[in-house]
Image (tube, rainbow, N blue to C red; front, top):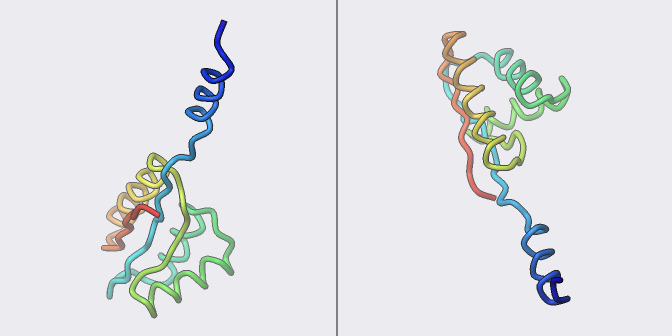
Length: 99
């Protein structure tokens, strides 16, 4: 039978928070505003209004936050953006940074 201290240690391990990553879109001179809005709606599940706001932020600040995710999800979002952008002939780039 486990001691009370062993159970406490076990609970601490199980409840540790995962490291989170910010996914950001980077501005470029070629990706259309409509395409960026579409990416934000399809990949990041933003409403049209949210997507427009983020797209404008990308345009004005050269980058904007799309969401915060665990490593695997953030990495998947970055890959999805890159894949869709290249298929559509755009150089749009997403990156991830530890929060």
